[in-house]
Amino acid sequence: MSQNDIFDREIVAPDAELARRAATLLGFDARYARVHDQLRLLMAADGLEKWSRKHHGSLMPIAGLVADQYPLVVFHGDVGTGKTVAAECIANRLLTEARSEDAVIFRLSNRVRGSGKVGEMTTLLAEALKRVVASIGKTRRAVLVIDEGDSIAASRSQEHSHHEDKVAVNTLIQGVDDLRRHKGRVVVILCTNRLSVLDPALLRRAAVVERFDRPDDAERRQLLERDLEGAGITAAQLDELVALTGPTAHAPGWTYSDFRSRFYPTAVAKAFPDAPLGFEHLRAAAGETTASRVMEDR
Image 1: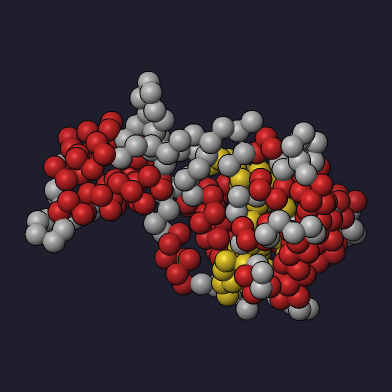
Image 2: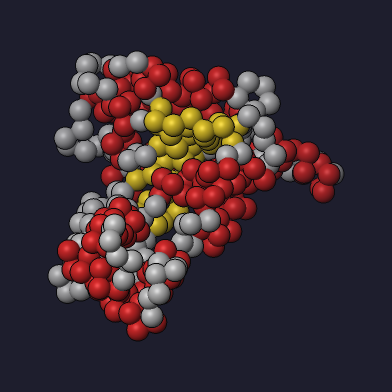
């Protein structure tokens, strides 16, 4: 595997496309407001001593302790709830607000697991962390987003955990520990569908743990209103679509990706190219779309 394949994306922030995409994420502003203060503090650890001396006249013990927290954030929740894209958009907005120039958002590729050769995953993971650190130089910042984090950070105590997996977890934990010396200029956001399988030693290091859920009735209505603007859908028709996409006795409610990756393309395909998109297309597409299976967190 080429070392150039370690990352799926390397985005120089501030990025206009991520800023635009954040505006399309339902509930993004509320979530950002909820995690903003903690993440800003995490990324500004190098300024805590100055803050303490300015406002308290000395370096308080608490300032030193907070500055030494681990630069790890965990986003967890069911499949299709927007964890990874939210991680990238949140990182982009934070870096924009910090007025960081030439900051980079890296998204680790699942290919880091390698091809099964002994030691390969550990080598690739160590190389990824090395490249992220190298990118910051003396003044820049970086955020590493790890998607499907449970695939490389599962508990080392699991019976089926192989030696290679355990060594990789050790490497990740050691890497997060080592990042503290950069005082917030490198932050890791790990996304997982299964919080309970993460290694306890890694989870204990998380400065922020944020849960992502499937949209409720009000959120699905807001999503449909936003995405179907211009289609002439009535309030009563929206009510029916909200009901059709909600949980039943036999199935969970839809995820965001169920709407945008499957439902909308199916509906538009029924109308394109000869007819305008109408409620009949949407209702038929809803009947053909099933909710993503719930990822068991155990």
